[in-house]
Image 1: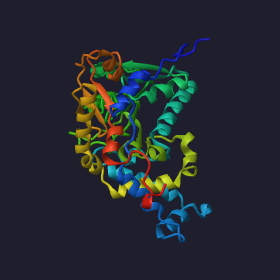
Image 2 (image 1 turned 30 degrees about the vertical axis):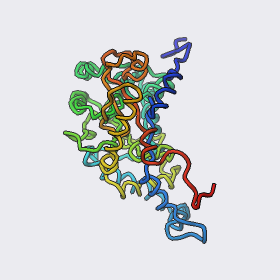
Image 3 (image 1 turned 60 degrees about the horizontal axis):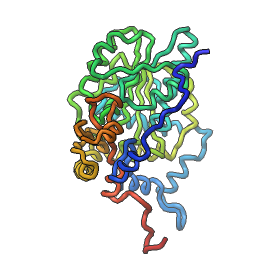
Image 4 (image 1 turned 30 degrees about the horizontal axis):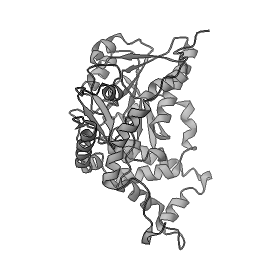
Length: 370
């Protein structure tokens, strides 16, 4: 029996010593969401106070869980997704009529997993060999989910995007993030790549826009989510708003996704309420612009500690450096994609940024109580 992508020894995710060194400098290789005062203010706003009986905010929060038999909870995810589409519209071009199937999900990961799983199931039914294609250095979850489903994963150098688009098999699934997880920047060729893929008879792209809301300026052109090449669009509030553990996201699909049908009922009303509140309180550029100076100062501090000349990425919690450091071990650790000698180094500034804005560590109790 042949096992797809079989690995006898699971490679380590990172070098523990280098990981400790980077974290000691106030950064991390893994991208972590930044909890901001605005994040916690929104939670205070929706949860209200129950010390002397529920106030208006707490009553509203509790009442949304009542009377499930009336179907009133459907409005929660419908309002959230509708609001997200409007909120994201300065950055993402969405043909709303072309994506009639809309599902709330537990962040972006659930959406990605269901699309990849459904693709593998379709391959078994239609008798073709499934392949998930990505650019080298992309978000690791695409490969992990595909391999868990027994689907072959093919990686390509992003510099060869034109040849990749022209040669992509008809039945392949391409997973693409924009802004890009490879370097934390808006990839300028993404729309041209989608346009080349749109020449095929069927949509073949899972478009991941989970970094929308994390960039301070509008891209030169809106992300072409309305391209005929896009079959599904996944989004999340984890990185834009620092709500990773609240699991707030959604998916827009051209065709029904039966495995997510139950999410109309099996959803987290508290997360949806928080998500809607955040979208209403802050536009798509507000927080990245507010924390841009913090990002720049954090890049300077971390760069000085690691001996790197760091520059801010488009994504507010990330920074990058040219691979010119004499510390080859550190460069190999941070290079993305790994193994590409000319690739830039990318790291996450969340730890030091959290220290700078005072959302790291425990919350002080009133009056100094512990």
